[in-house]
Image 1 (cartoon, helix red, strand yellow):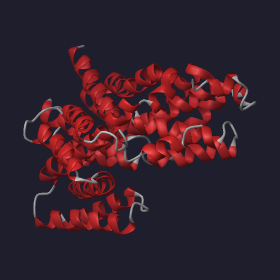
Image 2 (spheres, helix red, strand yellow; image 1 turned 90 degrees about the vertical axis):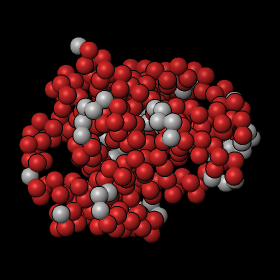
Image 3 (tube, helix red, strand yellow; image 1 turned 180 degrees about the vertical axis):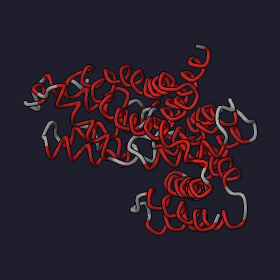
Image 4 (cartoon, one colour; image 1 turned 30 degrees about the vertical axis):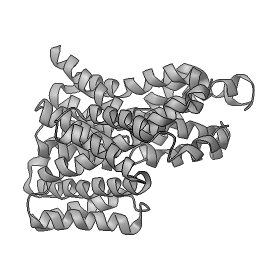
Length: 175
Length: 203
């Protein structure tokens, strides 16, 4: 029972922090599940993140289902998945009646600017924290740099799955 | 407020959309779209606006702009707002279930049946390659956001404040976002990188 409550709290935080796209959830997931609670090893989390991007659905939701299942079976996966969508439902239910005011409110817009910069700092932090755990040699660094350049050259028009699969195949060949 | 469009009869077939139809449509979208909100929203627009004519494009765009500025996975936020426009709060609940159930079952299947194979050396090597790709992907996201958001030294300071809170002080990433929003409120008031877009999208 305690486990379920912890699982619920962790994924509620992850759902709350998932702001403006799936990649932001990666540092949150790493912090909550790997460095904070030691529920998963880094490699296990990295597998979940790769699978989450290759299957339908948002990264946060997929990671919740997977981690919940790993920790306490089907009940765990249901609890974690519900927890990760709960912040969306609560926040939207609260603000939808006020949405016009919310949009034109100067304070909200000023905070929004900072929130976006906060999300950027979270991603930059993740490049480091996730990077030092995933990149374990010069060869790895070359692959990561190749994936980055590939994405920059196509300027976002390439589905990220293609880059992930390509690096996976490179991994099979090299490692 | 979002339901207003439906109750005022702006879109006359909005109230006739059945819950089963909503569930089926969102289930299909959830099943056949790889990835989250950014991959899903064009598919949602195609299914709801173009194919089924359940809402107008302007309504869809206003939903999308709201879904990306509130916390939570974008796909879930989109499903909530679109479902709510179609059939109120029940519609929202049905749309969210439809969107996440396919991925829930797919992940359960993978976790339940394929997990034992993950330890095979070649499979592990594949995932190691994938993990390295994610580093490149994160760096790319940082590059794209940075190019858009870092417009003056003030923005750099706000961003650095967030990084320091998480990386050096070792606080929870959520505090990093909070620290940056407070710093940003204080240091760069008035300039809103997406301000223009925010007004243009209002219906």
